[in-house]
Image 1 (cartoon, rainbow, N blue to C red):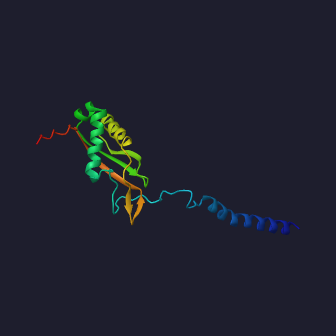
Image 2 (cartoon, one colour; image 1 turned 90 degrees about the vertical axis):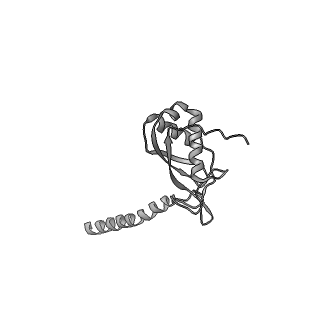
Image 3 (cartoon, rainbow, N blue to C red; image 1 turned 60 degrees about the vertical axis):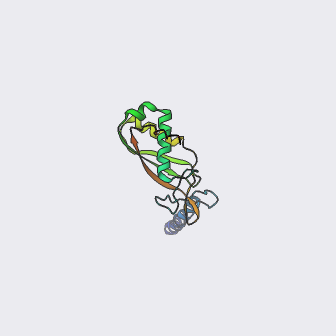
Length: 153
């Protein structure tokens, strides 16, 4: 009788062990309607994210620098060096997950992060016609000087 109970217990436990991973896996599998954000984050795509006015990475850098000049002119003019900021532009065009990759100090680093958090929604990156999230890294060089006035024609 002991052998029968042990065998039944073994079969019962074996069945539970064999079915548990499948049910756990089914619970953890995301459905396509649960998230519209693609899981892959690109670093280089056919069409990189850009401001609605265009201009590519250069215009993004200039926009960040203008924001720093407006909000923190002391740091913009006195800091020296280059801050490398990294962030992701989501498929929705919003800045996400910004961080300082290479910094030069808390003042300039904080000013750069504050500036990217104030940036407008971008035109998202595109790959094969689909909007995709793109991770970018941009150099912001200090000191940031105001743009030279353009001569009147």
